Image (cartoon, rainbow, N blue to C red; front, side, top):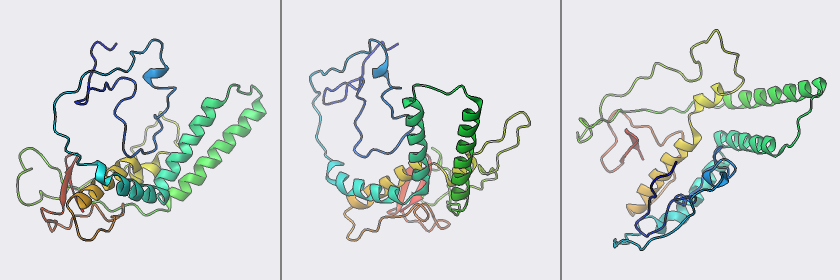
Length: 234
């Protein structure tokens, strides 16, 4: 139950509309049928007088090139190809108004679905696992000039611990080993923004296979960006 409303400095409410994104990435949950606006009697969007604040305009000058680079990356990313496939399948199921009760038909649908997932699993498994170096950043070491020790991961999302009581999964494993494509693209957009906003004379858009590699502390302060508790080198 909403008991208070939140307003942005320009006076606009976030109710129903949220904060409009400059760069929209695909999402399984980006569906109006699942949002609050689809519920009964949602609070309406409204506006109050804006608060006095400086218009810094730190983002808008770079939105167009950021969007173009992001679109180009996603077009060639197999993780996003799989995500778009899942979104299409979800919309297809939501649009269906009837389900066959014929056992032969249902078995055929199940077989086709499993074959489809195995095709994607084979395709995604063939992609090399991205090489990423991680450094845990804490409140205690955030201001230190050098990177903290490299994080060593012992857990592999591609091979989760067996659960005797669970049914085997046809998906998740090949997707998990590639990481979250949306999070990865968000990092790349941030890296692009840092480059553009720092008025670099030359710019080469980083790829998802190389931009996070920080060679044992060789990353300079000018190249380093702190994101979600980790440093990434750009």
